[in-house]
Amino acid sequence: MEKYRIGELAKVCGVNRRTIDFYMYQGLLEPVERTGGGFRLYGAEALQRVRAIKALQASGLSLQQAGERLALPNAEWGAFEHAEGLRAELSRMEIEVMKLGAEVVNLPSDSLARRRREFLASHDVVRARAESCCATVRRAYLA
Image 1 (cartoon, rainbow, N blue to C red):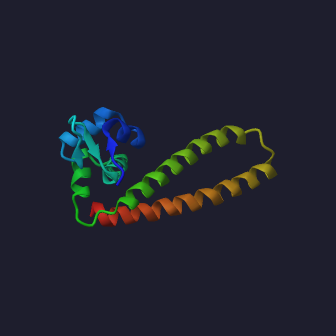
Image 2: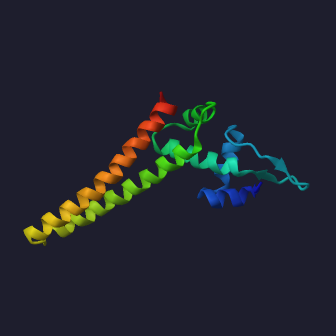
Image 3: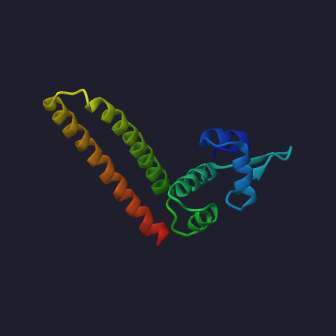
C-alpha cells in the first residue's frame, strides 16, 4: 500500500498542506500511521477522499455536508472524481464558447453554420455525460 506524507498528499491532490491539516482536524481524513518521528502517513483512500471532498464542494455543498455524504456506507469515490472531470470539461467548453463567439463575427455564413454544427455536436456529448453523472451523484449522495 502506497503511503503519502502530508506534503506529498497535498501535491498529488492539488491542494496545500494546510488544507490536508484542516481536513484532518475536521475529522474528514485520518492518517493510516505515524512514522517514528511522528510524521503522519496517509493511504490511497485519503487521496480519493480529498478529491471527493473537492468535487462535492464544487457542486455547492459545504464542507460539513461533504463530510456527511462521505460518511455514507455506499459512497462511491469514482463517481465524485468522474463528476469533477466532467465539470472541468464543461468549464473548458464554456471558455471555448466565449472565444468562438468573438470569432463568429468575422466568419462567412456557410463557415459559421459548419463550425456551429461541429461545436454543438461535441457540446451535446459532453453535456449528456455530465448530466448523467450528476444525476447518479445526486441520486446516491444528495437525496
